[in-house]
Image 1 (tube, one colour):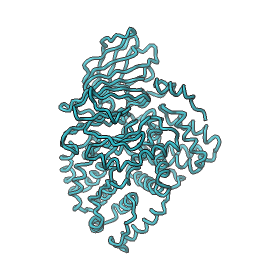
Image 2: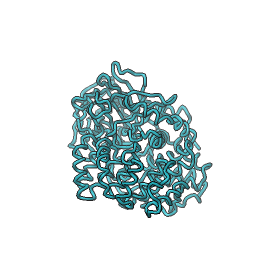
Image 3: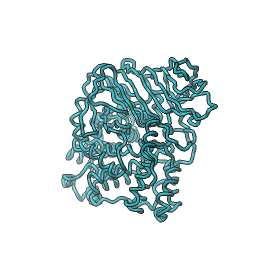
Image 4: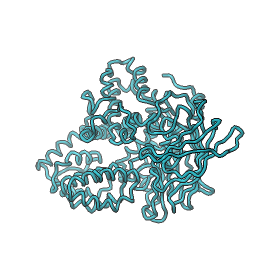
Amino acid sequence: MKTLPAPRMLACVLAAACSAPAFALDPLSYAHTDQVRQTGLHLNLKADFSHQTLAGSAELALEWLDKSARTLDLDTRELSISKIELQGADGAWKPARYTVDKLDPEKGNALHIDAPGQPAKVRIFYRTAPTAAALQWLTPAQTMSGKRPFMFSQSETINARSWVPLQDTPAVRFTYSAHIDAPPGLRVVMSAENDPKATGKGGWNFRMPQPVTSYMLAIGIGELEAATLGPRTAVYAEPQRIKDAAYELADTEKMVSAAESLYGPYRWGRYDVMIAPPSFPIGGMENPRMTFATPTIIASDRSLVDLIAHELAHSWSGNLVTNASWKHWWLNEGFTTYVTTRILEALYGEEVATMNLQLEQEEALESLASIPPAKQALLTRDPDTSSEHYTDDGLAYPKGAWLLRTLEQRAGRAVFDPFLRGWFDQHAFQSVTTEQFVDYLRQNLLARHPDVMPEAELNEWLYGPGIPASAKRAVSARLAALDATRGAWLAGKTGTAQLDTSKWTATEWMKFLNDVDRKADRAKLAELDRKYALATTRNNEVAFRFYRAAIHAGYDAVRPPLEAFLMSVGRQKFVVPLYTALLETPDGAAWARAVYRKARERYHPVTQASVDKQMKK
């Protein structure tokens, strides 16, 4: 398969200017990327925890594509701009005229900069709002030590514009550098080169030499310590959590090696992980070089590290080869979910991978009941301009992975693995569309093996609702045996005391609790809790599923630990379904609203918006 010669690839990486196909303008961005493209970024910012702002400047390097263009349109959200300068041909900086449009609830504020002469660089002086959608500022009381504050970002999908003025679309890639000033005693990390030995004296400096997209911009500032995991891997966490985090993530270096054996060299230098505070809104964010991860993965037994495998897999599918717009989100998440299973299999064996895969597929099928059919396609045909339209239901993860697994099963790994690696190699550091993948699929797999998937079936996967009937489901022998155990327990043929759970994995507990939800009554769940202390387990995936089943069964004795969970964990995957379940009954709704009034300020703005939506229904 054709790949770029090494010198050409290096030039593309350093200049962030590889030739790329023209895309339709991103409906979620104000940028006219057909006229001008951002190729570089330098940030010079100071963190002010007392006012909960970042202030300073952003310098953008520009490549003008349309010689007649005289305006630079950028994405912002609630930024206070003090001045803008343009760099002339003589290298001197001169004031620029600009206007800022009114706030659009979805897209933020368009920034229009007069750019006569098509300057090579523009410098914008600004301050973020305390309500910046990407940033959460935590008081010392909201951290583990209680001594120092913490701040972290979550830019995906279109929230980078709330802390940096830029072309906020995944169609554009750029290199970046940064100088960040922060209060003494706090470490700064970014999605860039991080030096574990850096002290921050004179400020914190960063460089990202590979071209990234705006949603991959990330910053974290807090009381952080670093622990080495391997030659190119480390974990950063609050001092009280660093030992547990290092134990939990001990296999990270092995994961990198396993992924490389399948899909080629890791191209980002280091792979580090920051364990964020509990209010982090998602499981993990694949920021290049520095994954941000929820502390809910720390279960003391390494049973939930598949999340790290998933974020690492993004180093190929998502970060290396990126969806050109959020309409093509499945190219990021579906591919990554497939690669995650392959990494787990390589490290922990086929049975572990198959159990995880079966659970993933079962939960996908279960989710269809709550997703409108029009949103179940991998690629929607409509021009909807809401990012949530493409990314809020999560079906793209398992359905996209299921499509790739189907291709793998039919073609065989000897054919499919080189095919997939070729996709990553040939499109490295590029933003791509579904149409590009389909063209690649036809030319490099289906042309040689036409029986692998007919065109009608491929269209069913891409544009149809649900999971095609032709999809083969994963079957784990251990989970099949668990079905019989669960059936006997629900029927009263096996008592709770007789359940042999001594060798159950976390995945088996998750499946068991999924399957008894809305079937087991209050008494049975009380027995489970007394026998196995599920309401206070350190495994948050298990605890979440137990809480959900308990709410549906009316097992109100679970409310004290459930309240503690909702007050301390801000991961949307957990808190949104739990509040939703509580809202199904008047008593549960009253209790949920009372808890949320106390917990809301502890959640990230993204989580707040999601729960607010449920509360209004």
